[in-house]
Amino acid sequence: MKVTLKDIARETGYSISTISRVLSNVGKISPKARDEIIQAAKRLNYPVSRIAGQDIPGKQQNIALVTDFHEGEFYASYYYGIDRAAAEEKVRIALLNVAEPRKNIKKFMSDLIAEKYFDGAIIFIPELIRQDYEDLMKIIPDHFHVVSNAMIENPLLATITFDGYSGGHQAARLFHEAGYQNVGIVKGPARKAESRFRYNGFNDFVSSVPEMNLVWECDGNFEFNSGVQSFYDLVESGNKPEAIFICNDLMASAFIDTAVANNVRIPDDIAILGYDDLPMCRNNNPTISSVRTDFKQLGTASIRSLKNRHPKEGQQHGVLSLIPVSIVERESISTKIEV
Image 1 (cartoon, rainbow, N blue to C red):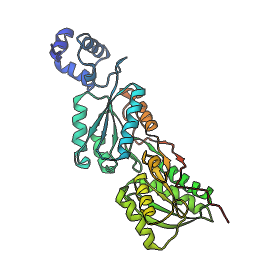
Image 2 (image 1 turned 180 degrees about the vertical axis):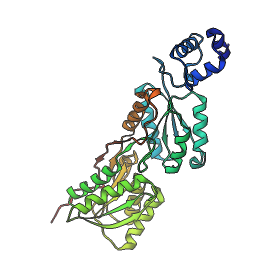
Image 3 (image 1 turned 135 degrees about the horizontal axis):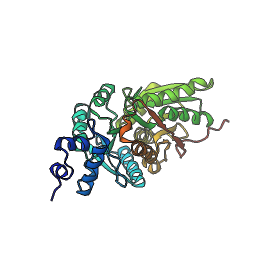
Image 4 (image 1 turned 45 degrees about the horizontal axis):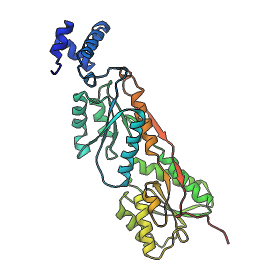
């Protein structure tokens, strides 16, 4: 038989409205009444996952991974990394899709919180802008903790993401150490903060080294066709960079395939470095050097941030934590030998 609030009221002598406030963690209730109601709820086997904001020993936490589905290796690798982290951290993770997120995210999160099933949420929706986060802040209660994995400047929600600036900086440093002087970059969408951080890190290092020159830039959009088009844009420009940092692996793979089809030798004619180190980098011919982003490490940091916060702590507003990145060198880059 399903346990109801009326059963808990009969057991404790408190009113249904008082019990509802305790189980929803709203309003001012005396510690004695709160404890009696929670203990009675557990004795009657009222579903503990529906007791909002309570630190119940032994309870396995339920975390929502809120995103908008996209096909391709990036999202598959991201989901896989979060899932592996959840298994190690002994939490349940549920992947939830938001269609048309800029239009629907506020209602979606309101409904999710009202269900009282999830203890917190990880949001990864790169399309959201600052106004969307401001709207979310108005409807997320303090006891329901949320972490974002998408970068925006001056974040509002607690944000855990990769250090894109360092990734771009390391890319330029690698080219410098390999002996490349004239370099280029295929950027991501300018509207995305992560794209700008990668570009700024790369450009800042190049600008700091007198013998390096950024001789070619191309606007990309993180899609395969953008990588194809960037090769033809390079040919049309007449510029001849010795090495190009392409700001995601999908564009890098497309650029390399198109270059090889046009009798350009990689890395002899142009060295290529991608970003994210997706499985395609190992399977491409030639294999692709890439900035590695560890999705499992990202998932672990995000989940621990949610697990380790007490329900009464409230939200961590504006806290930004960066996960370090590294470079995996493969066949698409070689040390330039001076003759």
